[in-house]
Length: 303
Ligand SMILES: [Fe+2]
Image (cartoon, rainbow, N blue to C red):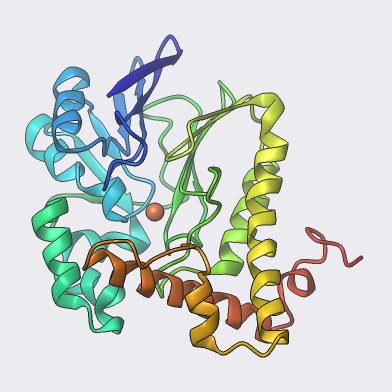
């Protein structure tokens, strides 16, 4: 893993490769009151190394997705850290049946997905934890640390704002070259737009992202814009194909988020197809309501 000192007491930890399966970048914040770890899901070995090295008192996650949350089982057991998980996502972490039902269950891929999350990623039900809401005071752990509800990518997603330093740990807000992801039925495309809009109003000097590295102050407005624009671009691409008379299957064959799915080995290819189908469904839901520009005229004024 790579450890970047962002300030004397805020560290940004990234996996050796951002493309590493099931891993994301995370943050360690040292303070007088506590050491806090957020999303230290750097891969099995690096996560354990980070926990041993920094021994957090408090373990936080932005959301339940497995590439962000596997490590908190170890935080609880290895460091006796207090674990706080988003209130709206507690059952995703404590129950295998619940997470399967809300993710791949709808697609008749439960068995393959269960095998992947349990045997490849290492899911076990989280036993001891408390829940995080927008009302949870994190000041008692670190002055100025504020959880900001940013649902959409997942039902209870949080970003974390270090207000004194004007640093945001954004989580999965799509501030990377791929743009926002909404491949599960519990994602909400409108929610993503609203959450990006909310975050883009913060006074920020720096953003630390889960999969897209560090964004400097001068690049922040452009990063929000490009994340939002990627949604509009996808919608337009779908609309163009619908206008041209393409069927749902043909649109999916051309890819919604994943451009080429046929080269991935099974069962991954089926997971990619499942996520693309779901992303198309989220767009169609918005299109039925008039489309992104109609729903968000302040963000995308009509030409
Ligand atoms: Fe995610």
